[in-house]
Structures are given as structure tokens and as C-alpha cells.
Length: 349
Image (cartoon, rainbow, N blue to C red):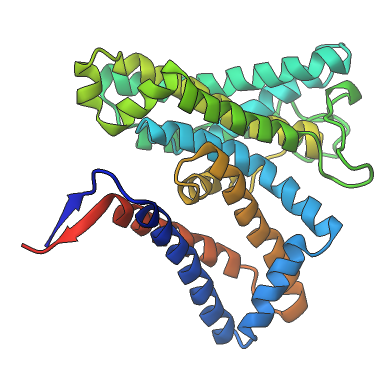
């Protein structure tokens, strides 16, 4: 047997395998819940209720989805051009770091000027972090999977050094954390009294902008062409290396916005545990969305709902919340298989 590319996949071929992948994930999660001694229907119902069953739960899910939309967009943009960005975590912390440096009193501006400045500065910081692996790739052929992955650990150690040194809050009772942002640097709440902030609206805007770039601009066309066939794109006159650099700048900037939104909208300061793995989870989000920028929104809500709902379910029935991690890992593996079956057919020889 061999795999044969499908030139023009039909609508059913494009939608059915991903739907089966999601359904299979639910079945596997149900079996694991049964193995843990719980009613699978009760567990799944509690996950849904815990994620979307009340105003508080829904807003918490939207809040958790905000950084996942940014990192999912970052991965989707990079993967579309076959730039394998595994370093969204480092880019996230770069955005958070520059937000803290500028937003704790260095710039004494009003919110109308300061917040846009922090957005631009954080995007530039994230773009520069991914620019280094991109240049190593186009100039020396260095594998960006290795360099972007290693940058995650390097940058986290760099942040740790700063939080134990020049950025350490003198009023923090010894804890490695930065000073808090000034009021003008904080994103306001969308709903007063709850944690959902305007970073979520920024994430939605970013998804629409990325969709427009990919579908309506020359850069988007070049990114898709380079991703489909780099050699053919170069033969057609597309500057492949320049497109990869532009892709890296855009992807790094998007991931950095996750760090900005978490610091300016939610935490208020920078700590080493700012991200519980949003950069890595962004890969799952992007793959579940089939690299579609608008699909990233739905995929991020799905993943955030699993995490928020699993926490609530765990408290209610005693099933470990690690079930959420298993569900996401299973969903990713099955979605990769679904994408393979969408683009290729099995032919017997």
C-alpha cells in the first residue's frame, strides 16, 4: 500500500475525518472516566457545565482561551509556511517581559497612548525572538524545530535571572516577581467584577486580521505557496527566504501578544509561572483548527473549555483533572491522522 495525494479534496473528505477525530476523543475520554470509576456521561456533562454552564464559567473559559488564540495564531501562521515554530513559549515571555519593563513606570503616559505602545513593543520583542531561528534557518540551514524549542528554556532562564535581579519587586517579600504595572498600563475588564479583559477582544481582532492577510494579501499568497512547495515557489519568483523571515516576524509578534494580555489584562506582574504551557498548547489549537485563523478561535474555546471544565469536574466527582491533558493529546494525534487522510488516500499496489 502507498499514500496518493488527493488533488481536490471534497467537502466530505475535508470535514468528516476531523469530526471523527473529535468524536473518537470523546469516546476515549469516556472509557478513561469509566476506568476511574465514574459515570462517563456524568463526567462529560460536568466538563461542559463547568466550562459553559454559567456566566462565571463561560467568562473564565473565554479568559483561558485568550492566550491560546494568540499562540494558536502564531503557530498557524508559521506552520502555513512550513516554518516549524515550537518556541511560542519564549515569544510569549518576551512580550510579557517588555510589557513589565515599560509598563511599571518607565513610561508615564495615559492609557490611550501607553497600551498601544505596549502592544507594539511586545510584538516587536516576540518578533525578534523568532527572527534569530529564522535567520539561522535561511542563512545556515539550521533546523528551526531545535532552535525554537531551545529558545524556550533559554528565555525562561533569562527571565528567571531578571526576576531574581534587576526586575525583582522590592516589596515582594523575597518572591521572584516583578513590580506591578501602573494603572494606565492595565487592560480594563469587559465585565466589571469578573476577570475577562479586553485582551480577548484583541485576540478576536488579531484572528480576523491574520485571516485577511492570508486570504487577501500578496504576503498571504506567498506564505501559502512557500508552505505548499518551497522549490516551486522559488522557481516562480517568490523570495522564499524573505517570506520565511516575514512569517517569523508575524508569528513571533502574535505569540508575544499572549504574554502582553496575561500581564496587562490578568496578572498585573511577571512571574515564572505566568504560562502553564500556553505556547505548547498553541500547537494543539492550531492543528485542531487545521491552521485556519478563524478556526483557531473555536479550537481555543474547545481547549480552554476542556481545561476549565475538567477542573470543575475533578472537584465534583474526584476524577483527576489530568483527564483533560489526555483528551488534548488524543485529540492532537487523531487530528494529525485526520489531516493525513484528508490530503491523501491509501492505494493498494
